[in-house]
Image (cartoon, one colour):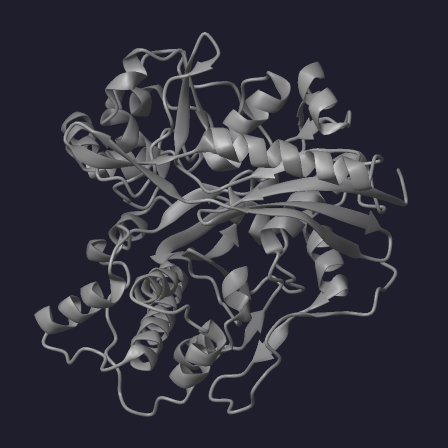
Length: 492
């Protein structure tokens, strides 16, 4: 076991990607940002429509460039871990990619839902996979994709990038659990679900767990990045990694991983597959160390970022901090809408869609930008509170505090509104929870910083000793610090 060392975390989100070097010792964790690059949908004309894809080839280039910079600064890097968003995949034949992967916001998956449900009804689907119904779940995407009949292998996005780095085909289990093809009880691929999606046998790769070594870098990749560190599997679904880094010191917590999406949930030891869970549209996704992330997928700051993009297309850049301050100063009532409504899923003029939703539901639309922002954040906080109420009713869990991690933990107004709506204290931070969780799983696998063999609770304790979350009290008028503040580095 080594007292200190460094690993590289590749953290890919729906709007941007990062390569971060995590330096781990017995006193704490230091995160060093090496590279950041944009990510987003690419619209391509096909079949008389504009289809949305991911440019994974460009992502691969950015990742290898970032790793080259990381090894240039720190040749001693011991391991590389990759996490990304869920559900989307690439298809391979003879090791070659069959076209750019589709984006989960592309409309084609709508055809897949009916096809799957003709073979297996919603009740049996949930009994087997335990997932919340989302029309873009991979099982539905596969059913709508004729190219699966040409493919020999399907790899989710982080698995695809891992394959290009190592030449090893595998499916990391936490991300595989989001596909709708993994059995929630056995945690293995379910043949009946595969048949419901119309998949050929052999398309799905071998399942592997976080902490396992995927493989060594291919010689050509090692030469390109200037390093020889292997790739280690982490919670490759970004929320699985984020939950690892929740700085909870007590078991009675709920988490909100807040970014483009908001994942609101609790951590359990076993899935909940009851009729009540299905009726509430809750999901059972895999976590690190075999834990279950029992949660609901709620729309997130996508609503705000897409609104800002709309306003910027019409004029000058938007000062988001000033806009949030204006939203915090709004005293007039604003409409609360359903952020999960499917009309808000696709890219486009989000303020117009919000106004249209309000009109259709007999509400007055926001009158200006500050009111739109306040309406978005009030609606998200209200949805968080309702979701937590549902989750506690279904699971019987006694939640006494809420941890908000990810980019949304910097949004002071959202955090305060969440405390107000839930009636629970909110602890905000760390912002880089996903990358931290990625680093921690690698550090444990490599035995760095005294973490070899550490429990999940011990990993969280290390985060709690490194980063002090900002606390928001229900009904508080205090203005907290805008971001997490580093703790004094302490010996564990």
